[in-house]
Length: 617
Ligand code: ADP
Image (tube, rainbow, N blue to C red; front, side, top):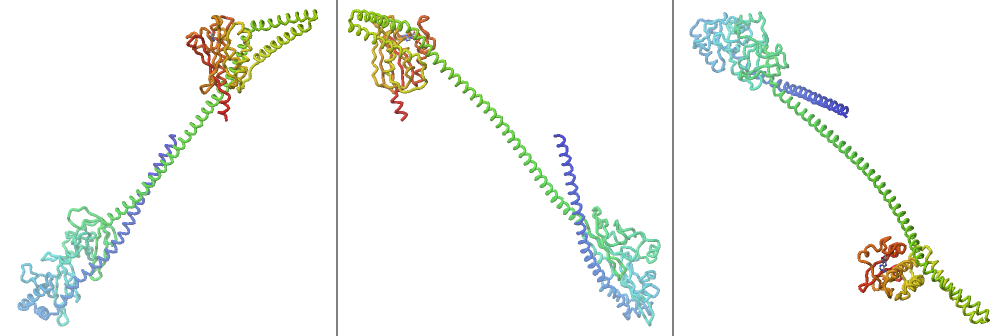
């Protein structure tokens, strides 16, 4: 049990770890892919933006580029350079320059002589006028003196403002006599380069940021400048060396395009963030245009995608877990159900076994009971037999008288017959012999009744003639009745058929009439009445006597075996008990009551044979 739980826990841990790895792996993969795609998109959009800025710069430069060459061909300017000290010409050109400057929107417009000294300027009237100052050190002067268009971005030495200088040589008689310079302000264009998010800036061939959207990035460098470059810049007085500190952009690899950098383009105090650095070279100016595209949004989007992907994966995993758990629960339930079923089957088998055992027990008991019943019946019939023997014992005295009396008579009649024959009186002898014959006939009849009474009865119940049974019984008891001098009033009509057994019914009436004879023996004029009553559903045979009746306390147990009030040797107490059972076997019953006028009354209720047969039909 614990081992399987352990392996289960291991498995769960393993599955959890695998799920975590899948989750993190997917999140990472989605993040990287989204970031890559969004960066590619940002790159494309950034390059388009770069091209637009390039056009913007080109337009801005183009606006001022042509101006010095136009001014250089103006006759007043040429004339001034031919005689640079002429105050009237200076004044003319000064006012002309002032006008032009106002029209073009440039910062300053001025004329240098061949030595680089400003001889006329648009700001002639201002305190910070260029007039009289030498600009021979400026590359734009040198370039123009070489007959070329000069161009140069630098911090103004007088104004302290950055400007883009365009210069053009003024020629007179095939000789360069001076230079016209237009200084364009960068504020406007830099305003255009300002971005809400990200940054645009321009670096020159030395890696100095000449134009920048973020103000604090201006005049910074992409990389530390070499000594040579520093001294050249100093010589040209382009920018103060002290200002040329590296740009606050980390990871900016020597102006390489397409790299990820970190910077803080505004001074809002925001923490520095990541940018995609894109750049494009500008062929005309030998400049490079830079664009920083903020990647925070890209990262945010990628993170969102990664989160979405991981939540989808997590949902799938959770769903899987849910399904798995449900399946496990189902399996558990099924197992429990199976277990219940097995338990139920076991119980059923157990109960069945118990029932079978109980059944076998019952069958055994039934067998034992029926054996006991058979035993009882056997005992009962043996008792009947014993009762009969007892009755025979009782009868033996009467019987010996019954047989002795005819035997004595037979002896007398035969002696008489011999005497009559000796005397030749054949007729009287024949008379005596006939008497002998009648006596033997009577003896034979008595003997026949005795034989049938002594026989063991059959168990069958069949229609029996009631008056025949009574007649047989009275014949058997004849000697006792005569001996007792009792009157028998037999009112039972002939032709009544009852359900019973001939001998057993005879035995019942033998008992009842015998008891009545005993009961009436003491008093004078013993009388016994036999009658029947078929007014109810069954037939009642009533045996009544005029004896003392049954004592009240004996009424309850008179039918119990061995209940007897007779003196030992006279009664066994079995007669009524046996009779009671016999009548019950015939589906009838035996009752006793005392007659109001005195004496006992025994009622034998029996099924009438006709009624039974009718019911059967
Ligand atoms: P037994 O005759 O051997 O005593 P029974 O079962 O025939 O046994 O009778 C039981 C008892 O019932 C008798 O002892 C007697 O007291 C009483 N009894 C039976 N018949 C009568 C009767 N007709 N009148 C009064 N008592 C009777």
